View: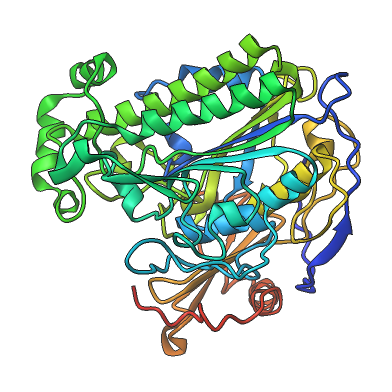
Length: 481
């Protein structure tokens, strides 16, 4: 799929579409199971299928060999809650209710409105068992957008994304029941949440497979987000040998991000690398389980991340080149903040060992999965089903544009149309607002702002930024953080 430089004004209208899905994995005659694996703050360059040289991710290499690797896949935006809101609702962040991280005290984030249609609801309506395991971050306990109220039969993990920074928490949530971990009180490190959440997810999928019921599992792992703490094992020991101790400890001593709410580690580089490899081992566990249960060729597995790499709690994306060949990290709307690793696998349905440069984003997943699940719901979405691409068929529709907004640091917007990328900064302070234009076909690192030499394109993309979004009282670009 060749990149183009086609440019047209967008209408900003969300299309209501009825999807009567005909897709099925292999020839089983059953709707395909779907597993969506979402890493937390994992950069595109943190895994070997996208160029990582030091950190080992053999299971993602296997998934890539057996599936399809996307090279132009984008998250919902550059930070957690709005990116996940885009994924769950099939809307870009100019239309989602949640457009930024906004805490709700004492635990949780601001909620989505009652009645919000989500991916969980779509799958449940289609007859699937639905489970969410890990970090939610789209409401607060008891709110109208608690996962159990928006389509998930089973939830186990962190309701609050802030509390999800802690890998040895004092509690998690089992549906709406608070589960205490007294053994972790007073900052003790006994029960490691990531392993526990992973085991609960595997248990859920085994139960559904044995019952013969199609399932959708949202594996919202917290790895490798800070804090950089995990059980010390042979993998950690190996990275301690591979990574020079002097470099690692010097960074730990000099980096102020270790302080505050995050736990400290003497070897932040070795810890981060171990967390990525542990995440990779979870992917391997999932694929092994599918083969063991005999549902490997009837299960669509997706692996991606919610936004670009972080520089928090002792992490150093520069050391690992976590952003790959791109510019920017978490909270940036440059490519490094929003272009994600994205690998899809379903033996016999998704072509194996294929690289695909189709331009897509998180809001495409709801219509894609609706077709896979044969949903009959009427869905309002900014997305386009990827089923033709995933099945190697002709007729894949392409986006007129992709749009993102971010509500911290003065407010940011970005839009992509073909090869052209517009970035607007300091949106909430008109006297300081700037507009940048990049041609991604010639400048993937976004070094050369060509707005002055292409004023007509800059003007048109700027107008699109205004027309493809709706106003939000909750997120109006005035937040200073």
